[in-house]
Length: 73
Image 1: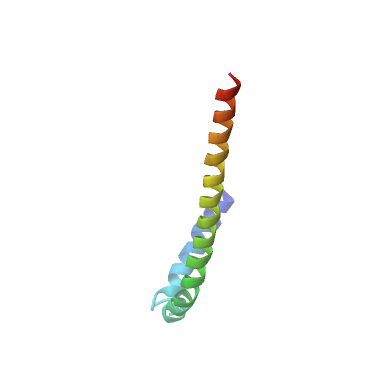
Image 2: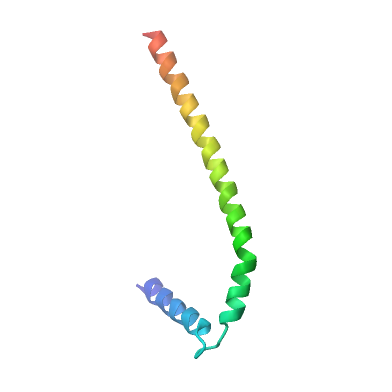
């Protein structure tokens, strides 16, 4: 329960920091996001490539295992 309440408090503080009536950090947040977004996309793409390669390997191994089981019978 504490984590939920603290999470909501942090979200509220973040929203107030971005709004012009709060701390007015809207421009700085957008500047940060413009710089961080390409890096985040690159990391996500790299993870997706690794997951894709692992999926291909798993499917190939499953086919090989199925083929071996059929040959043994």
